[in-house]
Image 1: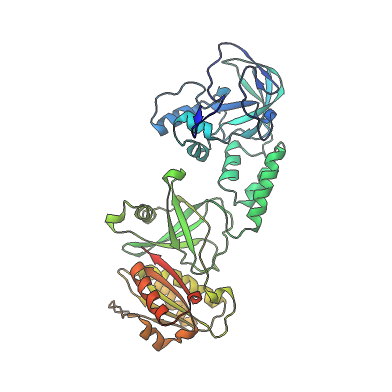
Image 2 (image 1 turned 60 degrees about the horizontal axis):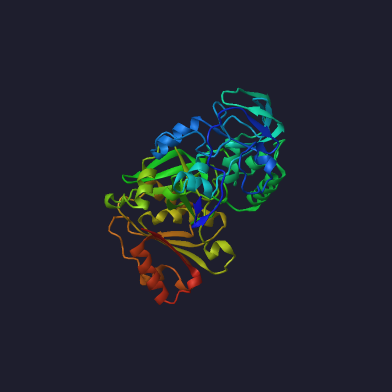
Length: 443
């Protein structure tokens, strides 16, 4: 086999055996083991792959029927899927007794065997098969029955093990469950303990987390607010006003589309994350950002989406006490979404004075504007300057300076690129210090 212009030996190519084969402590007799295994040969002795997955991969890849052994397995079996088989399960296979040790984590050899970058899809599917250690040597032949001898029902399944260790390693509860497995290998215990430590101390989470849409509110003809909660029922990580949530379409890395949306909900309300989404114009729906927006706009309650943790810079007002400095928010159209979240946080921080300059866009998000109005009513020091008639008053440095002391301002700008660039240029020319300026561009 040639990988990256280097010829290497491999035992991944398997052919069916004509008769009984002996299973020794380290695997099937005459099976080729080319490389040492990081977790010990005894924990990779026999590799099982469910036959049910053959049809799945043939359909998924548009391929002809695969020969037996296509995935490099020692035993192709039926009826033992990853959603059922658990760490530590003990089976009699032929006259041998085997114990499930771990799932298979694919490598570059599987890519070469399948003819393209297959391992990412393979792992994401969680249809990976599993390795077993040999408790008692014996013989196995085609047609032999497989008998479950022992099982700890509290032990994680193969599907759960792969999902948590490689995709949901943000989930401290699930990681603790894996660590409770009676027959967990020491090498995996060390890896999972490291993941658990990071999950417990990290703000937010690493990687992708699955969320479920629990509520949607139509803000205007082309704008909707979506409420998302963790599909696993876990608590949401705290966030700050003005931060964003990235949503991801596609489980296969090579086919993923991503787009960040501003969180428009209150940082105090962690029952759900709210993002407000506007449909992209039709000509842009073939671009990644248009594909994501079109999908999000059409999501139905109960559907699921992958998300990264909330992210984004914080205003100086949030990072530290800045005596005498005033939050100054400039928004255009949907740029009002992060400003609403910021105002909620300023209320909690007991910020006395804040200015919001807003340029209305087409089809304003009415629900968000009503929330802004309620915030202004109960916080007399919060002021909003805009033209409600629909003919936007031009926001410029002169207008801002008329209402707010620019020299004492911490500024956040959110809106279309042209608006952000114009305001950034004007404020910089007026002498605003760079450390006092944060921007979010939409489109």
